Image 1 (cartoon, rainbow, N blue to C red):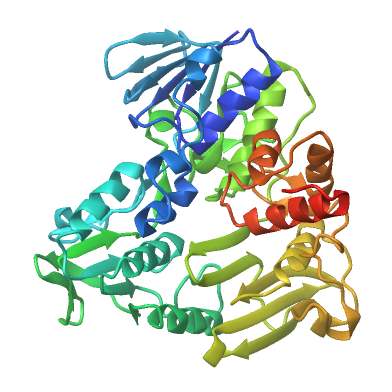
Image 2: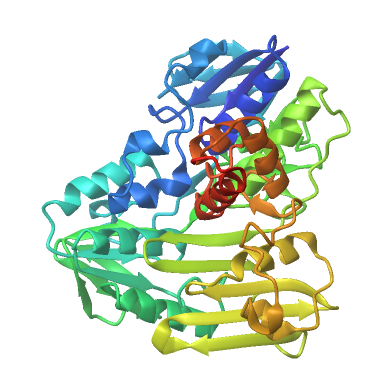
Length: 466
């Protein structure tokens, strides 16, 4: 079988690894538009903040492709799919045949059509990240356009380097898709305390050398402008090939398009009307496609993902999951707010089950609530104990002692405490060894403290030095 993968990002690279782990004989060819080896796009904010270098966010060693008999064309864009001859044509004129084609083309940054936009730098790729860092060294002030996840992470990263930052956002509060108005307000106040000026409900009209002119005529000063205005699925190749495309490339439960020989995964794929923009669904989809095309599990199916959004910005703890915007008219809502401390917690409960939550500020409740949301099981009657673990004797699921083996520790890679324990019992005595065996911590990285806690606790039980 000849497998051809278009896209060498987090979805495409994961698929190649999953396929090769199941089948050593399939001929695999990969086209990647970027010249970089696969890297973890989720952790680019760490590179921007200076806590990680490009090599530290790499997903595969440079030698991996050669060692695993994978033909990779990096910095080479696929420009046409000929479904009739089952051939992909790349920009260098190469015609590569396939038996199975997987589209993992991801998304492209949205660039607003305003005058002077070419003066700004988008924040989407490692090249973008390096361009922003280079510009920041000679800049006096930065303006970030877009108050979603990427915009907040970019603003916090630049502010952490000592650069004054103004964050502009069109909606009335930050992260309006994931947060309610009060949570957005508390988040904005937290960021303001970290050196980021927040301006919401504003629209950029023009980008000038001295900053961003807003629709109301005022100027947000800054000689570095960063765009984080969202992304759109990269579907051009699929559209040109005549595949069904709505918002993304339409796929079924096997992640097949309307051409049985073509699959799509990750941010370019639309499953059951949903385009997922997080890493965990992309990796779940890669596993299903690998099972299907290798025959390792022919009945493997993708049934959708339950999303947990984590903000990866230094000194800002935020997790949001599920239906966070429901009100008391449609659900039971339990909330606590302490704006002076940057704390906001909200539970959304329907039919006795957790269907949404917002946790802003440091909280030991994250592990427990993520598990309850992920499982969809019935909640205990003590709602206060859910928001404040330890109150009234409520267990703290983040504690390794309290965590059941079935508890999911790494959401991105679907790794449970039991799997970490089994890995430890097989000889993995530190986080690096556990990550190599289970992939825990290699996604968004927010589970690292929990994994360290479990490994440390296991070592303590056996009197082993971690």
